[in-house]
Length: 399
Image (tube, one colour):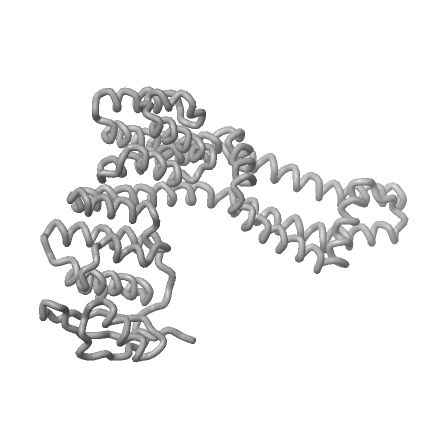
């Protein structure tokens, strides 16, 4: 059954008027949903979903939401009313529903973290943990500013990596399509023509001819293998063992390994600093930072660190067992713990590793270009030899 959107006007227990939206299958279900928020409905109006664009929310939406929420709290605007104003400005239907639902729950008396936790796919566990800790410690404005900075820097880093990888991926994709076309369609035609003239086909031409004719005859099998490979790759991403082996292989690749390590360490340090600044305990911050890094090796190191600290050890005692963290990061973390400025030290480390990773990312094009040139030259040489070697034999036969 489809879900409908209803705008409601209601009165809370203090007699104040509240407005918001409810998602329900019908009007009665929407009415009960509003009542469950501790409100007394006055009016309930169905809203046409077509008034806003239906699209997926993304990191840009979360960055904008965090910035606006930080400004509202800094300006001491009531959160419920401010969120409703934000919702009215949203062009995305789903984003409008999320913000309106959070606003309605806040107005009904729920905490901000509890209201946001209803939408974990949008906010994410790290975001929710930081908000929950900020509410407990009362430093919401500072935490939101740190969250906003972290999200913006993460988004910028992702854009730089995608931009750097776009050119080689386009070149490799175009080369693959062109090569497949030549092998499947061009080489068989030339080979058949040469064979009919009595030319002896060399081994290379016979191999490419066999590949091309097989692909033409069993194209459905080739398509099934490609689709199966894509599905397997998507499912393998969720398997920690497969991911660990794949990442271990990637880390052995020059430059690529340095970029992956730099990104993971920078994110680990950034979230570590954010957790400590939000009021989250040391053990919980370590675990949260490990999960945020997204690297199985660093996640395992974080688990060992938190376990040793939980047993009464210090951070300095746990760091020597962390093989993923660079020695510079370990020394600075120890110095930060001893000086009592661990959050500031983590922030400094995150900026440094982001700077180093950005420099490597910008230069990756100049590093990959020679490899691409060699790859293109090799593919062109193989296809050219497969076509021209029989041609030379044909010239000898006709001569």
